[in-house]
Length: 86
Image (cartoon, rainbow, N blue to C red; front, side):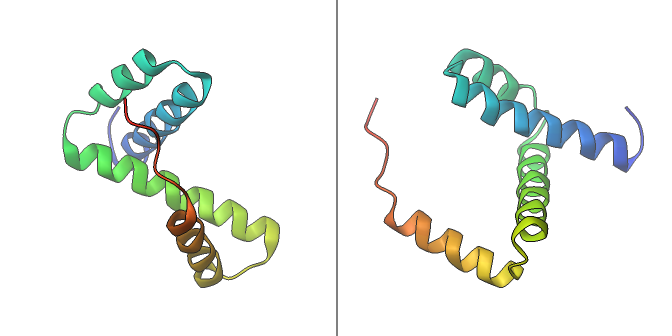
């Protein structure tokens, strides 16, 4: 892929694939997709863009401001227990 848009789309699709694979219980698939990012910067950008798109979709559906959504997300993360070890 060439140019910023196709590259960004590829990064977002891989980031979404990681999350989908984990939710299906396909940990090997999630790990393989994570390993497919060429650099830490590419992985970070992919997940950043995915989060930005997801928050935009939620904002469009709920009518909430982005600040309110981020505040709600922060509270949810703060009250979520850590996953079990292993």
